[in-house]
Length: 109
Image (cartoon, rainbow, N blue to C red; front, side):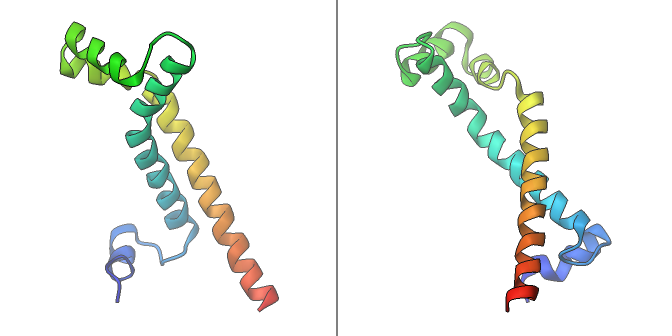
């Protein structure tokens, strides 16, 4: 038995595949994506708009000018919007996919 199947009811109080679990899983997936991608997206945007010559140069300048922690926080500017938008859209996407997949499995198989 997989670990998540064994403990999903104990943690959430809902059965596996329930709407609450699917929405929560999608929200956590969206949050995980943006936590790792937001700094890269910020660097990409700076390079594409011509504000920075390269991503590596930008990181180098930020670290030299502000220190490592402040440079890190600069790359996460706008995180509340990105995290809330990303979590919500991933939750809806995963839920829609799950229910359409389940429906097609019942109808066409």
